[in-house]
Length: 144
Image (tube, rainbow, N blue to C red; front, side):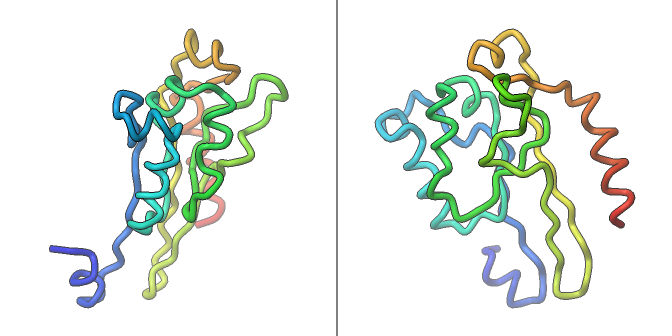
């Protein structure tokens, strides 16, 4: 069933990507540094995406810092820091809240596999998801 049919029946449909939406092996992805993938996601009206190791490790830090410049969706990522300043990337948010027409709140977060030995080579500081998830849950429990 397509999204419009579900929405016409009163359902709230979220379109999200859980990472690894791009693979540098595809010529169009390679030629555009992933921007073609982002354009396709824009056309599909994604609500949110996170990065996987394909985005985080096959792109240079500069490429990743600009890959989502034209995105019309949020990049939700809560376990990567810029190693140069110990801050979360400016292109990401740690969580996103979506409210349905019936008032149900859905809180999204995103985390990538924390490959310490390779993310650090790209200038990122990954945070272990097993450390970050309890922090996220404690934070959102206050907002419920």
